Image (cartoon, rainbow, N blue to C red; front, side, top):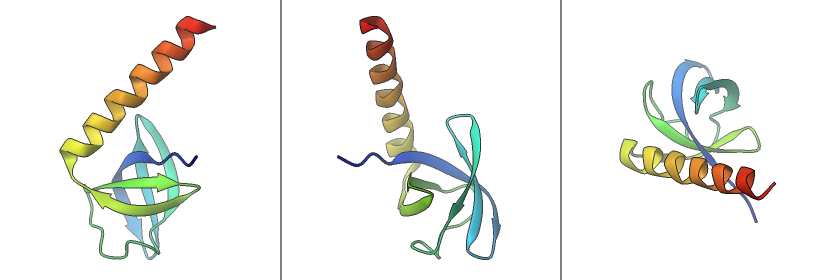
Length: 76
């Protein structure tokens, strides 16, 4: 199973972007989504932005990931 995390594009330098991934900044490749712009959301997997998503989908996915993390912590 693969997991992609939503991230907001903060800066772009060629085919590399700095993204905000749920409060953490990361550097990712945007080779697969060269049309992405500043402020847009992408799904990131293994250091690559793999698709552009809308703001609503990004926020919904972040909320679901937080719910999963909370449930996992309760089971530990």
